[in-house]
Amino acid sequence: MDIFENKPFTIKPLISGVYNIEDSWKEKPSGRYSAPDGRYAVNNCSDVYIVVGNEKTAVIDFSNPNDYSRASLVLYRLAKLLGGGKPLVALLTHNHFDHLGLVDKFVGLEEITAYLPEKDFAQYRVFPLERTVLLRGGEVIDLGGRVLKAMPLPGHTIGSMVYVLENENITFSGDAIGSGKHVWLFYDNSLKDLIHWGKIFYDTYANTGMTFYAGHRWQCFYKTLDINYLKQILELANQIENDTAKKRPYRSPVKYITTEYSGDGVCIDWKKFLK
Image (tube, rainbow, N blue to C red; front, side):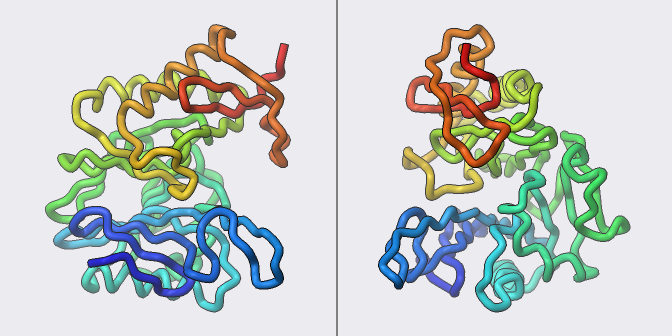
C-alpha cells in the first residue's frame, strides 16, 4: 500500500500491518506552510499509529484537536478499514491535549478497551471505568499474533508510557524521548526520571536494533530514530545532571520550560534556571 490521503489525514504504511496516520493533507502539510491568505502557518502534526493483529487492532494516540468536520469519525473508519474490521483497542502514551484531540468517537464504543498510563490518567477519566485498564508498566496487550508491551519512560510527563512491538524492534514512544531532536520535560523530577527509566529501556533493548516512532514525526531531523538516539538523549541528560551541558535561555509559551540544553545533535528543554 502506498501513502495516501483521506482528508484530514495522510496515511503511511510502515511495515506490514502497521500504519502511521498524520493530521495533514495537501492543502495543510506538516510544518510551516503558506495558508490560503498568504500568511505562514505551522501544522504541528501529531501522529496516530495503527497496529493490526490477527484478532484486534490497536490505535495508539488520537492526534490533535481538529476543526475538520467529523475528523474523529474519519479516524475511526480508517482504523476499522486498515484493521480489516477487527475490534479496536485504544492506547495512550501520555496525557496531553495534542494526543487526545480526536478520542471522542472512540470513547462511546463498547467494543473498545482503553489502556492508559496510570500516573497520567488515574485522576483523569477518558474512557468509562469499566473499559479502562490502567498501566503501571510491564503489561502486554495481545492483539493476536502481535504483542505490545507497555514500558514506563517518564520525564515528558510523570506517566509517559511507550509501547514495544515485541519481536519486531519497534517502539511507539509518543513524546517521551522527543521526535528527533528536542525532548520537553515538564516537572521538577523529570530529568532524574528520564535518566532512570531511559537507562532501563536502553539496557533492555540496546542490542535489538530498536526503531522509535515518535509523536510528531514531522519534527524528525533524522531518517529514523534508533537506539543510538536514545543513548544521545541519556548522555545529554547526565551532562545536565552534572552541570556540564551547554545551555541557553529557551523562549517558549510553556511557562514550565526556561532553558535549552544541547548535546550531540539533540536538545533537552526543561525548567531548570541558568546559573
